[in-house]
Image (tube, rainbow, N blue to C red; front, top):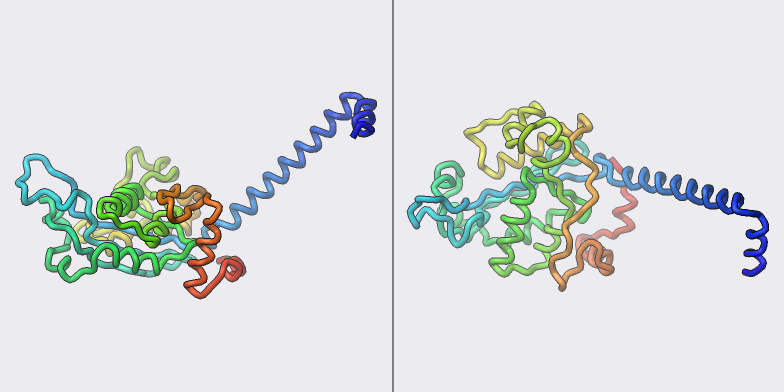
Length: 282
């Protein structure tokens, strides 16, 4: 150690500056290499985008009769639909009404094609969460038009109020998400937060206002927009962040046990992390 210090001291400061410069250049090139590799790993061709849409019992309305206020609370989910986009193909995955809402606000009663007769035959929310979780892969990205409302208000908030503390709910909420309403591309082409109708118009997707506000229809149209965005190579920023862990009982992304959690989940699905990583991209 003393010998090395003596050698370096004898070489003068210019030698040390040269070593530091080479080290910094090497570090920068290594950083660029890692960035390129990481972007290749999450390229659009290697991802499955699952477009999700909820319909709810609505928001509280002013000057409305008590029987027209949404109960048991506002924004309780009454319908959900999932449509996937993988390798440019649009595939319908799931739709269901959701039991539990006691009343709708006036706007929902007029515009959403869901009735209390539909809800009476529908599964409860915990069952729907379980069925949705079984369809999702740990590598999926959830896409919604206003992702904060669909995932945080409709799903996470309702789960907390209804005391649904399940592994399946945590798994859904821990998946990366992408919002087509607030993404950088749409902010660059629209002066305001675009509606789904405006999104469809921009991407040349037919949209019927009379058929809107049906989760099955809306998730299909959103998926068509995502597929077209992927074809054009626009809008879908490479996503890199996920929702932080909200449960101390189940590890989330960033938790030291999260890899084990994902491995156990894949094992239940009959696969493994090694097999998943060995699949060809695209």
